[in-house]
Length: 302
Image (tube, rainbow, N blue to C red; front, side, top):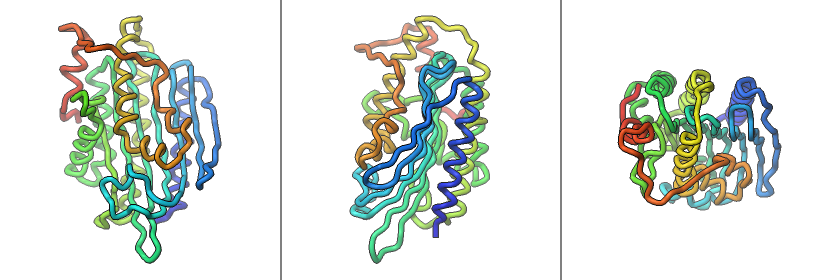
């Protein structure tokens, strides 16, 4: 049987550890909001806005339950429709002010779907991905190498599967372009009964624990890089892709909204300043074009 209490304790500890390190880096405390959900459950939202380094960011814990899984959770598994559910997880998105410092996303989560007279179906999901604006190859390679090290105890093939899954998942089909440079992504881990709870939980913990060593060295290196209006303008334009993906494709966002989740917490992932332009193209040979030609492509970074 899955140990719900152990998962919840780990997730709360992970949130606390990450926020403590980010507060120490930024120098400004995160706001803390504890909330409850009328349909069942609640959570703890930790948010920073107009920090010394982070323009906006959040690290949320949620633990919710309800009757009837929403469409985002049953689209690929219609046999679970109508089941009651319990879901808990930590979800993080950070938007630095400096365009030379990438946006980052991390999420680890656990679901149980139940129905009278039937065995519970449980699974883990999660991962992390990097969305740079003016990338540095050493930063991207470091991020991917740390992701690989987190999953390698379960085999090279498992790492490659999760890396490729991330590339496919964080892809804007209507733009025919990746959201960023990828990382790791997995879902439904354990649902088919091929992986036991302890093994699935261990890999999920390894991914969650890898976030700080994957991301902090990058922003520590780049936080002092000088930038101007041009770089901020391009950052705002590229942030538009982030918004498009989260509102159209992201399973976590859709699940939260469709299940009656707390909107303020769900949409904390949105960047504070965003721009859209009609049919914009980067100048040939420009640093902006380099992002498209050398980084928003499928590569074996690790």
